[in-house]
Image (cartoon, rainbow, N blue to C red; front, side, top):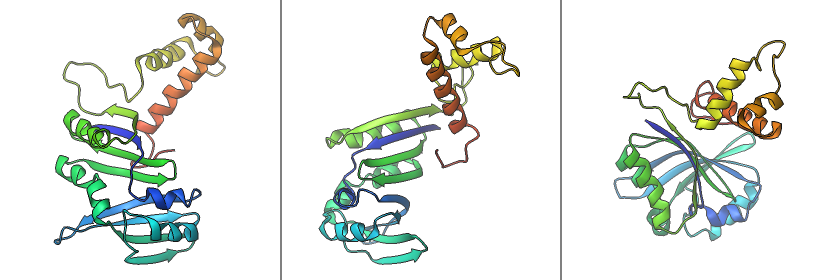
Length: 219
């Protein structure tokens, strides 16, 4: 299983969110009806009035089928238009057996955190956006498959980050009291203390997100 985080300029609700820049959409689920329609449930936090106004001009969705208020949040049941269905990646998700763990959107784009059964599946997902001329950025990729060559899993950290983490433990940086400083660790890799600090902290952050952080969530 491959776990990946991607950011893309997805067209669904793009017009709506551009008119409500302080709004966040969290995808809950999608359903494909027997008639071939695509309906989805999304949570909306933020400028709901601006969001509602944006929906009226958005070419990818029809007027909401239902809106339910839960305190400061709203749950919208939306149906995609023909343009929206043509732009939707969801059929590709279903066909490839991908699992959407977390999907959010703002005026800056859509953030997908998903599990893919194979390299081909993630390549197909990525190609969906590229083929349509949409910007897509792979933010993180973690291979959770069992290794076949006896090597240890890297939990998403880069080789340099892993070297930094191992060196920090070996040198006693995590001891109480510390046996070395980041500057001393940086000297071992011929980099500055700031560069060493960034490498170490990014490695720690990646390890936490891909191991002990609650499943389906991200900081």
